Amino acid sequence: MTASTTTKIALGSLVRDLVEEGIIDQADARRAQGGSTQQHPILALSRMDLVDRRQPSRRLSSGLLTQWLAERLAIPFVSINPLSIDVEKTTAVMSFGFAKSHQILCVESTAKAIVIATARPDRTDWVSSIEQMTRRKVRLVRRLCTACRRQVPAEAGAWCSLVGDALPMQAQLYAAGGCLECRNTGYRGRQGIYELLIPDRQRNQIQDQSDLDAARSEAVRSGWHHLRYAGALKVARGDTTIEEVFRVTPHLLDAQEAG
Picture 1 (cartoon, rainbow, N blue to C red):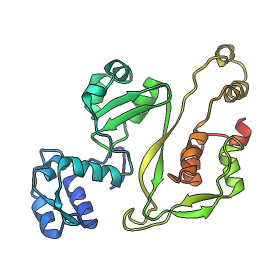
Picture 2 (picture 1 turned 30 degrees about the horizontal axis):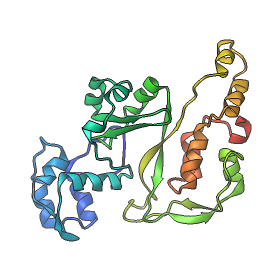
Picture 3 (picture 1 turned 120 degrees about the horizontal axis):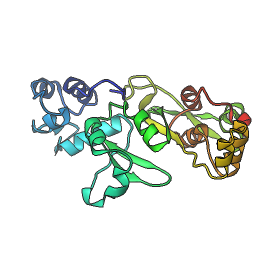
Picture 4 (picture 1 turned 180 degrees about the vertical axis):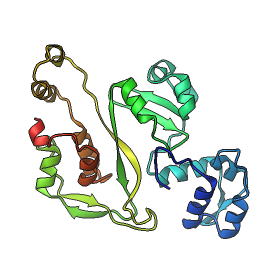
């Protein structure tokens, strides 16, 4: 199962994935297929008293299944304590109605990041609305499968095209492999890369309709980083590849030209 904007998490697909990973066997799968379709598939499975065949002492609870699904989709698993959420800050990001309709919840909002939890990790159709409401760019890059990613020597030309000299080049990066875990794609799940421009000295330039390149250069001197810089950080950590960052940022000039 991979993240998409329209595909709904289905009981059948979860069961197939659980069998594929050896968590349940075919007998469990046949029983699970008869589960309720009126409930969320995770909840339906958790009520069947299934156990993890790899570790029979572990019951497949809703929490365990949710964590497994998050790992399979390569997105962070967050346990939310309602008492720790700053209601004033999080409701400023999105309305209750929007959060309810998309089954998402803003659990943290700071000057540097917004953390959004979702009950539907297969859906990302709310991202564009979040961009508009927060004025932050969001791009989703495919995340390398950690089970089969392989180390490769970094290419100076590709790194320089990505981020110029804004970040030191890594000696080794990671490339996509291919295995049963990721269905031979080399990737599992997606994650966002972001840029945020808060006009300060650029405000007058923008209002005066001055040269956009000059405004961009001034923003860079003030510490602003573009999307490819954010992508390069994830490349350096081994989360994704240079090619993947280029794929989702085709509209940007090379970092060398951007300032």
